[in-house]
Each structure stands twice: as C-alpha cells, then as structure tokens.
Image 1 (cartoon, rainbow, N blue to C red):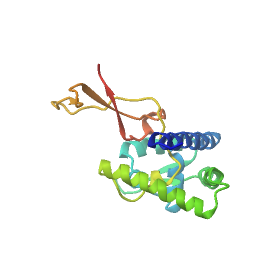
Image 2: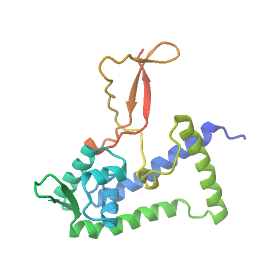
Image 3: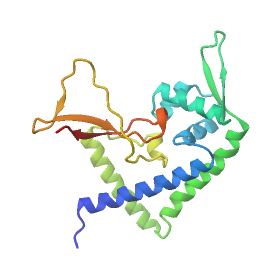
Image 4: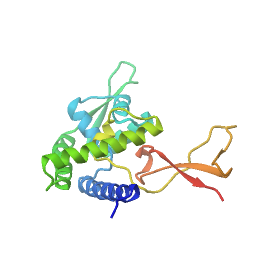
Length: 208
C-alpha cells in the first residue's frame, strides 16, 4: 500500500491533537490555561518582565499579555508592580506559588513528549525530525513564513480546531473571492480559551 500525503498528514494531525489534549489536562490540573505555562517559563528565566516583553517572547499581542498577567495574578501565580516614578511601567513577577508549580508543570509536559517517542531509537528519532522539518519548511515557504522556530512552536502549546471568530476586514476593503468568484471569509482558529487565545493561521469558509 502506497501512503499518500493525506495519509501522512492525517497521522500528524491526530498525533498533534492527542499531545495537545494531554498537555491541556496537565495544565488544567494546576489551574492553568495555555499558554500561561510559557509565561511561567519566561519569568523563571528573567523575573520582572514587562507585559510588552512577554508579548514579544510569546509572539502574542500586548493586550493579550496584559490579560494573561491579570488572570494569573488572580490565581496567585504572579504579581504586578509599578516600576517607574509616574507609575506607567508595570513589571510581572512570579509569586511563591508560581515558582512552585513551574518546575513540575514543565517536568510533566516534558514527560509527555518523551513518552510519545518512547520505543524509537536515536536513528528513528532523527529520521522523524528530519522528515517533519522538511514538511514544515515546505509549508512555511509556501506561506512565506519560513524561518527559525518561534517560542510557541518550540513548546507543546499546539493548535486545534476549536471555536472560530470572524476576522475584521478594514473599512472599504474589497471582499476576498476564490477562483470561482465566490465570496471567502477568513476564519482563524480560536482555541476556546477566551481573549488570551492568540490568533492562528486562517482557514477559509466559502459563502454559498
């Protein structure tokens, strides 16, 4: 039986969903949502980051970083402190609880990754990585987005097909149409985690 591209992508997709769900359960057991664990990791490396610095590292918007910090502060994971004479600059610091949960969360997520490839020897792991890197680079090149892995891509904070939200089109912009002339709306994946869910690559829906 010859494996088609569809067969391979289906396996990759199903594997991604399984890893994502296991990661979600780990975070939920600590009262966290994705990608709050990445905020903890960033603050362990450099405590006292500003929301803007966190946004840059995680490749999310500034308002998203602010809302994450607010939710994490409400859960006792971080504290926000004003850091300049006029009180405009805010820095985010880990609380004792935040430091306590960061290490075990990271350990459990690392164990998910290791368990996923258990049984594969070194050569098989390298071959798998090389194959997946080639697929990713080909897809990224087609989108003009090839380059090094982002912080979110290096984590197990993986996307899934969840609820959707409409992309706002600039005023006066012409509606997008496909090759058949049908109207197309761009719908990014909203991961169902509220306002802190970052935008993902858009999908299309054709209006009949």
